[in-house]
Amino acid sequence: MDTASKPSVLQQFRDAYGYPATGAWAAPGRVNLIGEHTDYNGGLCLPVALEQRTLVAVALRTDGVVRVHSRQSDKTYTGPIGDIAAGWAAYPTAVLWSLARRGLPLGGIDLAVDSSVPVGAGLSSSAALTCSVALAVNELHDSPFTRDELVQVCIQAENDGVGAPTGGMDQTIALFARPSTALLLDCLDGSTEPIPFELHGAGYELIVIDTRVKHSLADGQYGLRRSQCIDAAAALGVGSLREASADQAETVRDPILRARARHVVTEIERTRKTAELLRSNRFSDVGELFDNSHASLRDDFEVSCEELDVAVAAARRGGAIGARMTGGGFGGSAIALVPEGSHAEVIASVRRDFAARGWRAPHFLGVVAGGSAARL
Ligand code: GAF
Image (cartoon, rainbow, N blue to C red; front, top):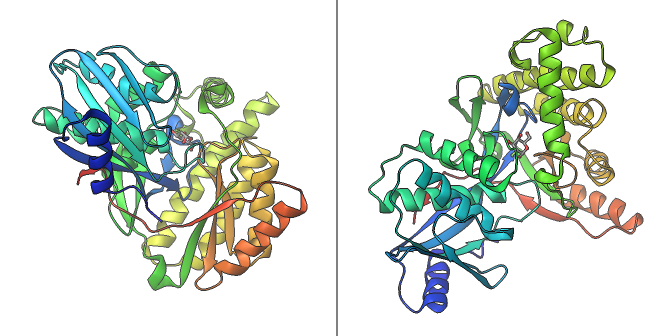
């Protein structure tokens, strides 16, 4: 259930600061249907926005002070404009820093943040936060930046401000999503194509299984995969792995780099095929591509973990027609494509397998493809 709402974030602002906000904005979390670890290789990915979103209530100040109140932590960060905070307030303050670097004259700001996007679940809570703040601040300054530019602002905030070396998928879907639609994102030229994603009519449901095992993109593994992909591309003499064929990938001498390259080139192809299937409403054939994507992320890219593998296997045994980890990996969430009406069996199967291992019970979300960041 979405507990974060416009009235509640406006009230939160008033309670925290003693005066009313100028307005409230929201940006969604996302699940990536397929195309994992392809965005920073100039590849294809296919995310959808979630209904779960991050809300910010905002008012501008003129005294150079930034305050950020978080409902989830019930804490307020206070600092001078231009500083990047440590901890949870790093994301919004890094957005302000990135906007200021592009010449936006910022005199100070009060922010209240509330979110229904699970944190650390691989559902892009960080892009939901950066994009909601970026859009709000931009609109309060009469929108000098386009949404494409705001994507770059948020990528810079995460990469250079926070030190999380993400690609651009999460920021793009947060700012360009459309309801009932997946976005085929071509990271070579940044172009996007809306792909119909009408699960209900097609007789399927998509479930997110949040393993509740936390990962951090800044912990080194994500960055290591990025640099291995650059090395693999260099070994092949191409600018990015997007330019390599499946046969070429097999010629990389180093076995680890070869496996990384194999994942990327085959994943791009699976993403292309999934988009094709969705365009013609052939959901039943998507399951196999999900399964192959998971195997590739587990065996060749080595970003899965035991909890994700168990979740995927249990979902399949419970009746899902395909399942895979989604997002950066090392914990976080898996998705399962399930015939309509059979999610209870799939959920029971996953719960059973987690309980049998003595693991904390996972959380489950039903996916409804939502819209992009907006003023409420
Ligand atoms: C994380 C990153 F933020 C994305 O840019 C993307 O690379 C993803 O991991 C893996 O597909 O969500």
